Length: 394
Image (cartoon, rainbow, N blue to C red; front, side):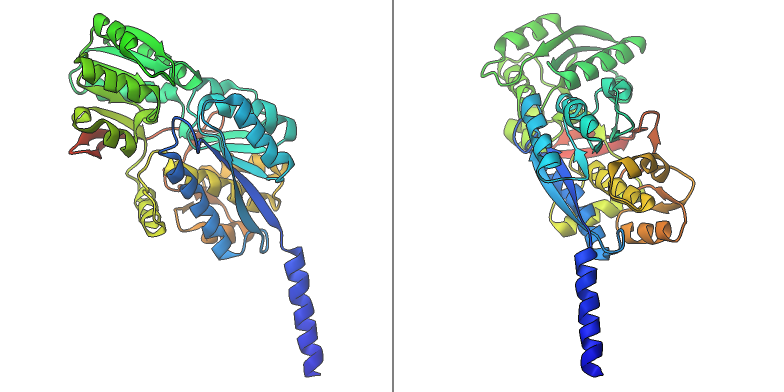
């Protein structure tokens, strides 16, 4: 009798193991390219949420989740599309956490996600153009649109008594979208944009661009570029020539590697990137420290939230199929319901399983509006003593 019971138990375990579902989530970020210095923390944020759910072991009655990385390169739409195609057709990912930069995100959305019906939740694609992109209800972002950042950046600059700026932007969807949004907001607030000029990434010499910016004048230079590419080159050339000594750094320019590379010349420069001083932010930063990465790094909290929302929506739908869970993301991210913070994903799954409602607050005080994008909170920063220091929240 004892042997029969043991055999039955072993058989049940084998059946359970066989029926346990493996869910793959693509993590598509610019592991190479102009944002490669901040991407590791973003990936770590998403994978922290995945590890938390796997530790609980209760998603969809015991499913395990695997992160499968793909390199968006941030700037090469063809390479990003190929990476996403591989994840969808070869790896059979159920959803995509990403992409990061706006241009490649739009390319993946139109060329891969829509044709294959795959949900995408970007933690950092901020182009205002994505707000009106055709997406079949598949695209969301936990970062706010640059239409919002343009207004916040105007407030940050104006509050410092600065009334005239020169503006340069990386010549792509992200740069142009942010530059246009900022220029409109700054001008409407009574400021003067002396020049609004694009720059190309990948150049060895930016002296001509800086000469044009300097000729136009301005109290500071706004650099809507990338930490590891042309934005850094523009700043270095400006310092070398004495054209500007203070720089305004929007989200794509906020990274410790840039501060380390430029050195003391960046002291006193300031800017902003998405962030909040919410209780969830503090919880996430503690979890990140324990996991061995920097929780205040740009878009790392948004990456955690993006992955978490994907998995909780799967639980709400009772399915890992994008067609089934896409319509639940907005509901889970907003009231009503019990508030859910980082470290509480197991609790959220149990509430959903019991038929209850949750309001996912997460690491960034998530509130999704309009076409599935964050309402937007920002961390105002200043470069002091070789570090990025938070001086305010907006």
